[in-house]
Image 1 (cartoon, rainbow, N blue to C red):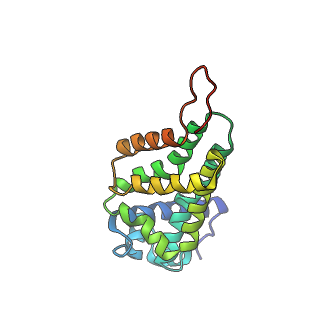
Image 2: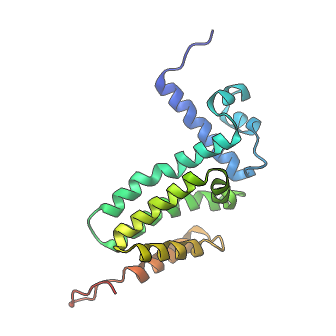
Image 3: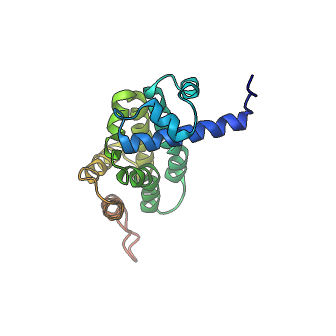
Length: 190
């Protein structure tokens, strides 16, 4: 009988499997990724993979939660921090959009990742978008402004830009929503 894993060993194995699954989904796409691909990439048997995840959808959801939903605390912290609102807004965008985009845009099938999540588990995707909305609203002070900001942000991704282009676009967008205070006049937003 094989020795049971300690809690930390089991957590490390799960992390290894989730990283392998994320790589497979980003490089092969959801439909072409098999459990065999994930198991091979993770260096475990397919049988063991079935002990960790019920099916491919379960693995995909776990990848989404670990990779994107796990960013929520950092985004909330940035949104509620003191300091320059534009920099806070850019930090939220970096955490929730730019860093994941860097991974997705570098992978052959990365562009489909968010669409697949919305199809497989719309509740988690909606939760992710809801956190983004609340973070932006906390910074801008207006739900309608936050909604428009996020719609504009979606538009920035439409042509699947390279990361440096997206960084420039995010800065421009943030400047439109949180203009610099006028020097010497103590200006206010809009």
